Image (cartoon, rainbow, N blue to C red; front, side, top):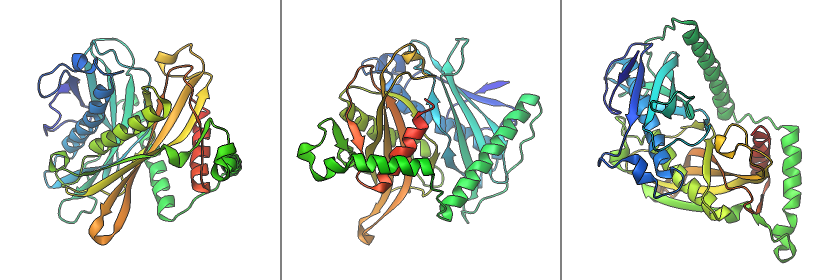
Length: 367
């Protein structure tokens, strides 16, 4: 059973009810397909999709809770990976449903596919929301989810496992528990050794190498009220879009040609950004390498020597009066560029950067 709704409409829904939305155009009635084609590869389209995913998922979460006294905040987003680029000659169909509900949190599965076309979704994402009391800001108990079909039960159990993994990761982060992987440490040391000439005798170092810190871009902006939720905090989807803007620009400047977005790693929204906060977004390349092939991304099927570039974006809340800055969120976006494009070898400056790069090398082995 499906039901079509506007993104910001708050309506009740049953547990097994899909919420869907048909992406047809901007609020100004411009058609997204024609508007985007002047720009490369549906970039503007995807920027809007990042916000729309969070908005529709939040709508579903509110409809499950059905309590106007509760605030729903985005806690995390699992890795979002594209299987290809959508055909912008078709309208795009976005749908979502609750797949798992805990005591105060819920998981919403979101999918995007070409409308009217019998094919698999080109994008899938899992959003986690937490219900909090508007006055105390404490988590609140929410109605449970009762799966009925075998498919719903499988989805519920899978969501429960993902929730447990996220809980364990948060616990380790709070307790500063960092397990040092021997392979990561070994590769990080090798990368740092390779960077030695570039750090100390740059005039004699490999001219095709560049230090990670030299790939940095940043921008600052004030958080505006039109991008806030009912708790007066900035929507997670808007932050993802702003981080994507800077990540795309960083990859573009680094590669020298327009990149294609492939995926964003899991995002945990740790410190909220409130209206009026000065936010500093900082981006840098943390991985760049050429791959023999890229699996699961149909546009590169059969192609060889595809450069992949991963960009880490950090969002800092800056308080000039207090001379302080707090890390709010980190985002890692991965892009691909055209086969045969020459990219420089990125190297770390310190052990922290070396570990980041080593972890990305391990992650990219499965691409």
